[in-house]
Image (cartoon, rainbow, N blue to C red; front, side, top):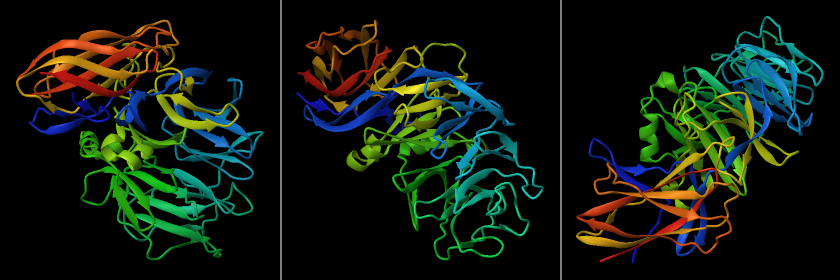
Length: 472
């Protein structure tokens, strides 16, 4: 009786190409259990924490002020520990913002403008030398920015002042400069479209930073928000010149793609102009490290912990909105956006791409604001030519339902990797019924090879550790 690992599945594309079938709304967990080296569990749900002012444009935890800030539609708000919010001022524009903080202020860059909040009032920076910034970071007492061409910073003694002599450019490549960040070793990393350069504070008279010779890289980002930091490294959506976009892990002097062939094929469905607004963000919980890749109509989730232990092929999944058709414009995207870990509640808090909800990541549910979520797994193909499947058994963890719905799981078969049979339905398990076994019998004759799709729609989380087949 063979046992199938269900962390990674197979499919066939319409152009006769063998492809990976990515899990949907399920994530892998590394653990030796029941003969498998890992299991799949529903992605955590979202429960309502607060109500903002509209579509979320960015969030930030300010350690100095001990406050959680968000730009919600065109409002800078403070999200308090009890889930109430305070309006702090108006931020123009409709695209995602960039945020940074100093010892004295919270900075917001949006719509080609800069604002500073000093814990009392929000003020727009009106210095004529500011220009039109697109990204910002803070280092050594300076707000460090780019406008897409130039690098510049504020005065050391005045965060609202920009000296016209304190400008520079990234010199390694003539590409656009798109993003700036501070590294863990206190340098500025400058991302261009096809290049990465590093600067350090050299206390020069005018522009205070000097480029680090010999550290530049021939790889860059698709857009201002297409980079994030995790585990002491930067992860980007981008690539080198004359190279298809991919997801890369960048360290000083080196880079490597962390995308599988399937992920690259998903990215390849978009044009470069469509990827300009792609967003990468991170989340770490229970020692698992994740990167969310938010594309125009997909949210891809990369599990860095699984990639290190089980390999890249098991590290990727797709997370989506609930199944109810309520006019959501993004069917293949997750609703959560711009996650902030709020230490006061010890939870990840997310804005929303659909409405003004501000949600709390909830490990006890799979639903999003009470709405059921569809979870799908695909198995590898199994060659059992001229055999009949007698028993199909999934290793599950039944009885832990916390909601009123009893979870039903459907199973369907594919003999060509493209089309699937009718679905067989079976109850995952009743609440507190911990001894239920998930077994289907007599699934029929297999002429050549077979693959399975496991699907459930629920508000509760489900868990699948492996699949056992008996056939003759």
